[in-house]
Image (cartoon, rainbow, N blue to C red; front, top):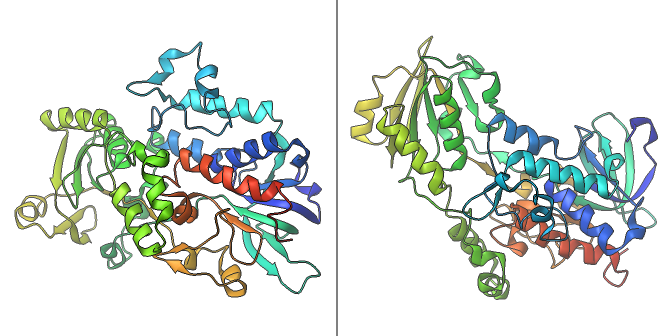
Length: 412
C-alpha cells in the first residue's frame, strides 16, 4: 500500500504482517468476504512475512519444526495440496515443510486472497485509547509520523523481547558489538568464521542451527546449556493441539496454575532428534564441544578475545583458559505485557491482571473493556502452550474472527 494513501479511519488495524496476522486475515475473509477493505495491516517492511523469511534465511533453517497441517490457510490440507508436485520438500517424519515451500505457499495464500496491497509500510509505535471519543477508539501513531484512528486493534507482531542473561549487563562496554550477539541479530550469510572459536549459549533448536552454520564456516563451536540438552520433535506435545490436554487447561480457573501448565508443556528449549544426531556426529569429529548443566557467571573481553567464567568447576577449568572469539546468545525471548511498548497506554486506561507477564484477556483474546485483541505469546493464558506457534495462530484466529464478525459479541 502506498504511504500517501493512509485513510484517517479504519475499522480494524492489525499490527504486524507475520504468520499470525496472515492467518487472521485469511480466516477473516473466509468467514465474511465483506470484511475486505475494512482492515489495514501495519509492518515496517511493507510486505507480508518479511521478518519470518529473514530469520529463516539468516539462520539457514532448512525446514519448519511443525507439520504441514499448521499454516495460515483456513484449510488445514491446503499446504499438502500445494506441495503435491513437490513431495521432496516435505521432510520426515511428519511432512515438515521446507522453508522455500512454506514461503511459496504463503505467497500463494496472499495472491489468492489479493492481500498484497493490505500492508502499510510503517511500524506502529504507539497505541492511544481514545476513551473520551464519542465512541471508544484507538489512535495509532506510526513510525513515519502519521496517525490513524481505528475502531478495533489486533496486536499480532509477537511482542517478545530477546532474553539477555544477567551476566551480559555486567560486562563493561569495551568490546566490539559484533562479538556478542543475540540470535535475532545474527545473519550467518554474512559471516566468515574460519579458525574462530564461537561460544553458543542455549540448548534449543536455534542454538543447533547456529552451531551447524558456524561449523560450516570453519569455526569450532562450544555449546553451553544450563541443563542437559534433550531431544523433542515439537515445541510441545501434540496433545496440546486438541482437546486431549486443552480441555483441562481451559477448565482450570487458577491462572497461575495455567501459567505453570504452559511452562511445563514447553519445558524450555529442546532440539529435534535430527538436529541432536547431527551435532553428536560433529562432536565426534571435534567440531563442537558440549558443555551441559553449566552457566556463564562472568565474561571478560581481553582486547581480542573473551575469557569465560562459569559455575561448573570442572567445565570452568576447561573453558577458562580458552580464547573465545564470539559469544552468541540463543536464549530465546520473553514476553511481558507491562513492558510492551504498544500496551503501556492501554494498560493505563484499561487495567487488566498480568500473570507472569501475560495479560488476562477474554475468550475472544480481547482486552477488558475495549476492542483490542492479542495474538501469539500474549494470548497464551487462553490459547495454551502453542500460542506462539503456527497452530496457535489458527486457534487465535478462530477466536478473534468470531468477535470481529458478530455484532452481538462486539462492544462498540
